[in-house]
Length: 128
Image (cartoon, rainbow, N blue to C red; front, side, top):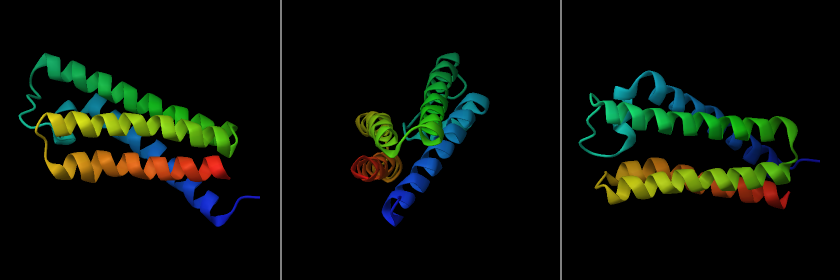
């Protein structure tokens, strides 16, 4: 029987899954909006940037779908592992923004926080 903590972690994973899919769609359909990703001086008008935004968008949509599949068809344990694996992507994004000179608010407040919340929710689901 799920506890309140497990239910909370599950809701958090739902929010992360849907949220990252929406962010991915934004990268796909409005590449210029992706310039707030946190890397300064992002040239949104260049084809190379649009290709990069497409790759990032595809990755985010895929990660969100994988989490949704786990939420819909797997036990908490597997969902926890998948959430932990997804936290690596947010952590890697935080490092990319940090080492490209991005603002602290982007690499810690957005990407780092997402990674930390994902880790916390994943651990709760693993321990349930």
